[in-house]
Image (cartoon, rainbow, N blue to C red; front, side, top):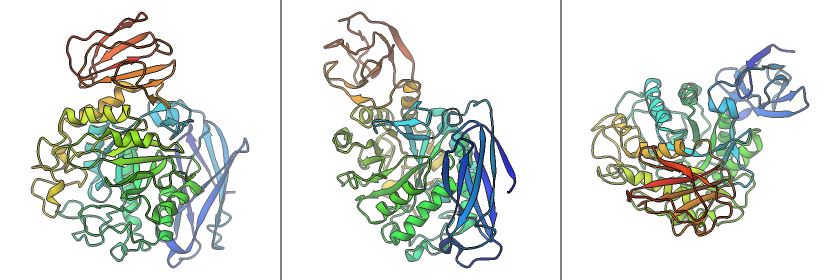
Length: 514
């Protein structure tokens, strides 16, 4: 029996190191390693191991139970005594949950009705995601600390990431500080393969994702992009063999799946690329925590590929880069069956091409409109220059079509619209939003969502008196919130038939909840 690893409370990551007795050629592709964890109660969970260079494999595990012992034993596809048959104990000590949201409530999974996110303990959750696709291979630890602090303070709880630089023809120094520089995850990606893994890349990425986790920001991990990519220089996600893509999805589950994560197995494509179901099925097979897995589409797609797949939890549309509000895309997806959670995964990036494109309150209106149209998994924001992680004003090599008129990623942190999107999560935090649905019956015309008998949320883009058409299931207590500031403008208890008055004719959110 191996050593005892002790952790304080549930949902804390424990790391186990396995060392092969000899060096193994092509270790990343040649050997499968995993470990089974059995709790005193009899519950068993299986976690894949990941190769971390030399003769080292690691297993990361988080207990969903708040105390007790987990006895683990490792297995491998190769008969090596350092891998197959290794064993030990993870002991979970009772502990106060603390302030960290994911340690109090556990990882995200899908709601009973499949429409929204919930934590492992059932607490409701709404995704409020930023888009920093290039952060994994461009950003430094210092930069990510600045970024994460800003986004956490504004209310963001997730970020979309390309886990590797996907363009096969991209060139530049292997230096995160240099113009056009980027780090490399797979040495053979320029040939359309992902077999020659660079452990040092992922060791650095560990530290970046640690910083995000400290700030309660969940990485939305995309394996290898299928769409435009970073600079539009021939993405590998459409040509990597499906078996290699699936293996890498398993690697991501092994390396990052014992902490909060979302798996975006397809991105910016049709959704029907063969790599996507291969990756989705692999995530589903190896993720013992049931964290969300789904697809994000290009603008010209039907947004319903693999709709009936067991591994698919969510579908995200993309409404393009021109600054149009298109909530009907989300509304149409909400009606698709079987039910999958829905969001607009990529509205127009703020200040793309001009300082007025999708700028300011455009982003707030976009978020509330998509949510009320049925995008109840959550909302996503993006800023020009952040998604590329453009280092500074004038850095060469980026596609001008997608850039802001000036500045770099730091400047874009201050774009006004990010505040409004972050506030949506703050305004709805703590409310029983699980499986809320669009509603057009209780009030005349406004965008609204409801959980019958428990919650009714109305978004009025131009304010105005709010008059109910019927009372059944409508909570009596209400509060009126300015979605641009989060300030409560009025609150009280409404009598049947009484309208909610408004003298300002400006955007507001009215929340009915006893």
